[in-house]
Image (cartoon, rainbow, N blue to C red; front, top):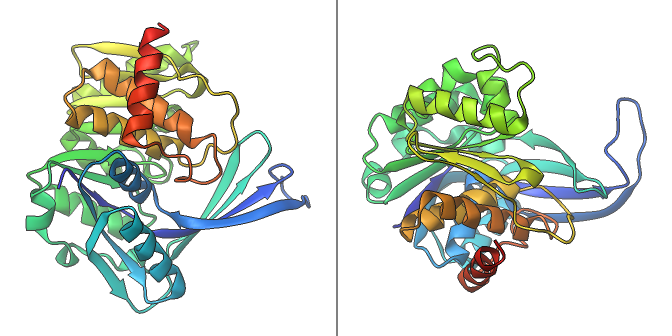
Length: 316
């Protein structure tokens, strides 16, 4: 395998709403859509569409939602031989998206909490070039991820996501130190470095540079911070690049943009691209994603990504 993913597997229900409701408010629902989801799973589907050989390690329930997730993986040419099927309800994610593309997300973990270290085939994981893992909800699953990386021989790609807010840096430090590729949004980076760096009056770009350097000093080999309309900041401790965003004519839904970015970036890594170009490929994949509802609908093919990449470079 080029990349094996490990993380939560969720059945996503997306509500298109007039606006995100505040406390006590009643807001109308415009449309409802459903799809397979999960952060690492979205990235793996993105990599499959880019022509890489990929598989996944996770757990689904023996319900209709679990069957739906497995069938979508099959259609996308993702190896599902190491996904555990168990009694219980498949994880769910309820997402509310407004007209500007902003969202609110609620997670019901379901059987995702039933994935344990003994369920994971280490030979399968270590046979991959890269293991990409993202956040679960519970502390037990976080401890499982830590135990796994102690035995990991493949390169580690890590998207901590909500772990940055729920547990903080001290609790995920072991994963950060072991990461060959660490992927964060600006908000996640802020949560991790808050109180550890002097950040008063820093610009977004300045904080990204300071925070990423801090995480490289802790042991991460490559750190990438997505900056929304500003693009992304990437560094390996020696080279630093602020990579501008790929232009988007319309933003429909920002859900899954970070997962798509990781897919484009890792595709660049595995095709031997320079660090800056990996950032460009990530930005392009994210831009394709946010033009459609849901995490996977807009994910590009290899031809689409490479064509956009050439045009992007030509326009610089």
